[in-house]
Image (cartoon, rainbow, N blue to C red; front, side, top):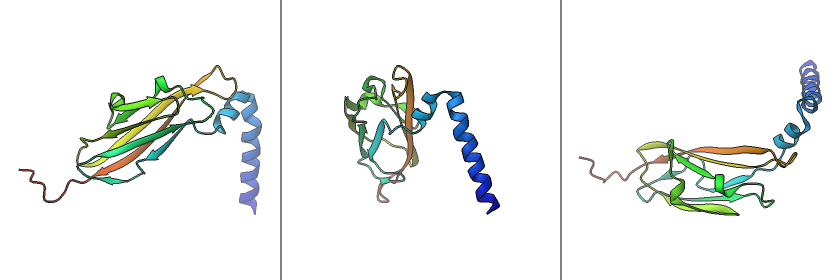
Length: 137
């Protein structure tokens, strides 16, 4: 009971402090996402064929497609992806054995004030497993 009350007090203090930091921060924290990763899924295992990438931008048009960037293991592979006002798609392969990190990032307009640009990113890990019959000698 005491712990619940303490958490409620801390939550109240946090909410009271957000307007002092600026109303825009509160609106930005609770805004709908600007990008949604449809495929691949987190921890998906892929083989020699690589994987399809499908990203959707928010329907409100807050995301700036020109700022969209795709990083695979820290390497910019954005030029391998087709980008449009509503999202991006492409096929990526040439992964390294084991875990690979896929990072997507985009800048877009905040909800308030709309002139402020905010960055949103997603990062997932994809597991590459070549076929056991593949000769690596």
